[in-house]
Image (tube, rainbow, N blue to C red; front, side, top):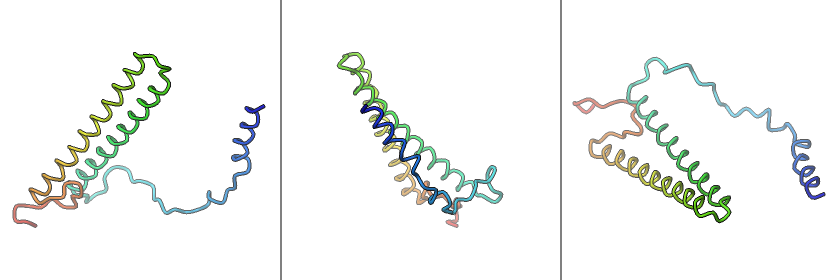
Length: 128
């Protein structure tokens, strides 16, 4: 009886949901094919570096969640707990490496006076 009540309560959201939010225009334009003509190398490099950092951070988060799920579902099995602990430790080490990489990129950018994560133009030797 509890399962049927939970099923009905959960599915009622989908049955009674309105379409009011479906017609809202949020102003997202579809992406273009490839790199637009006239895009500088600096813009491409900084965008690629930003994407790499975001994907790596999402992977770290995903691995932490998977490790926590494995730990919860281990049922007290020492081998399963060990695997989950190893996965969580590896994810935290990856997070530290990611943070250090980000810090190194920022420090090197400050030293050479270039914001590596926001390269609109690559400065030349004359400072332009």
